[in-house]
Amino acid sequence: MLGTNIGAYITTKFALQRTPSGAGQGGNVGATDGAEIDRTSKRPLHISAKLAVGYKTTLASGNTLAITVQPRASEDGNTYEDFGDPEVVTVTGLGGGPQQTGMVEVDVNLIGAPAYIQARVTPVLSASGVDTAEVFGVWILGGGETIPPTESDA
Image (cartoon, rainbow, N blue to C red):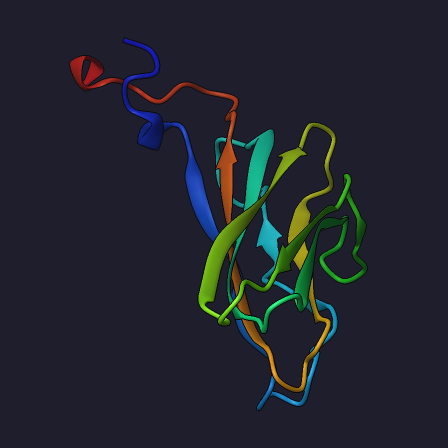
């Protein structure tokens, strides 16, 4: 039955290593480019993706963490340009400064995309001398050009 095993239809790829910023890290780290993914190196060729960037932050009450997640693409794996629209999420510190976690998700249409993709993530703390944040990411690739065999086909 189609759709009973989503794992057979998607592939996950490392997108961005854990990147800390804020107090003890020299402040805001600026834009960080993630790992290069050659989407033509294996079949099926995926035509859609979700770029998922997780965060963990500790913010004083009222302080903010703004995270911009921008998919990027390249024909040659050297020169990357923005591909699709960025997603921007702002997290506001709660009273008492508890640790907050969450996920920023960007849906990416890869139809007509160049061979190489990567993530650019920019976390910005409003008070980088006292607050902290960590970001990390994965690509979830799907929509391949072929449907994988089912167990009954084996």
